[in-house]
Image 1: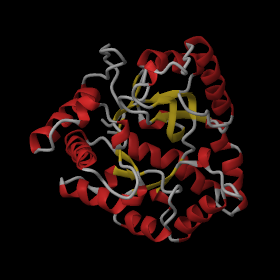
Image 2: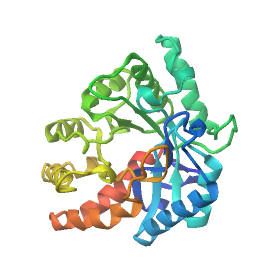
Image 3: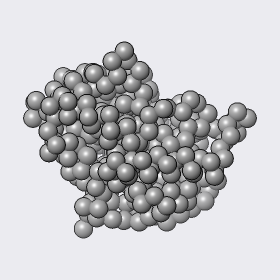
Amino acid sequence: MAQVQTVLGPISPEELGITAMHEHVVYGMPGWEYAPEVNFDHASAFEKIKKDLLDFKSAGGKTIVDCSGVANGRDIEFYQALSRTTGVNIVASTGFGAEPGIPGHFASTSYSTKAVDYVVEVFLQELNQGMISGFMKKTNVRAGIICVGNRDNKITATEEKFFRAAARTAIRTSCAVMTQGPQMARKQIDLMTEEGLKPDRIVIGQCDRFPDIERDKDLAKKGAYIAYDSAAYDESPEPGKQLIESIKAMVDAGLQKRVIISVDAIGHALGFPQPERTYSYLLGEFLNSLRHAGIEEKTINTFLVETPRNVLAF
């Protein structure tokens, strides 16, 4: 039976409710804990994130997916306490982002088939046995999604290793893969499908950061999911305008079942400015803009309830 892995254990897909598919509980680049300017006070951070989660819950939200991955501040016990206190499901992720965020132990491994298989074993352990929660603390809490990415307009040899490892792992587990770096979305798809992964297990993330509606429609028609999930960082003169236009174009093309929406908010940022928009922005101003653009409630339900069930269950 397909289940969704949360930090408090597996649940049925029907228990997910309204789901924000790309958010962060905490997030920092590897090494943040050694930076003299970073002050991570657990108690105050807990209260701030708890408020954000409760605001999200009050707006109708039930689940967030933390896409921080292995090395960017993930703390399983902290996540569990937040989930228990707020009643919001938290799905944690395994994986690494673009090369600047990959710790040297993994990034320096020579590029070879053996090196890819080593990363596969790392991912499999986190998905099947339990995630590591900082300073070698092993848990029995299983990851619920794989996150990988690239930076700029290329995929480096190191990043390619992680895309291939994610694909091999997804085939063995049926877990979904979420990417970042949509400038190279077609190459991402090519790398993972070369490994045998079907596009319907791939989510191309951050597509609103580098808009290209023809790219999005093409990849969606091939079976991939297209995530418009970076609204927290929209600083354009008319925030949301391009994003809403892209989503509406996908709906008009009959591709609404391939669309994912989220905000990419951070509960507590480690070592860089804290985004002002929080998880609840998704269910307030963002949804109001969609409705004003003529997006029907059943379509919004597809974005936030039906599609996350399909993606997260494995």
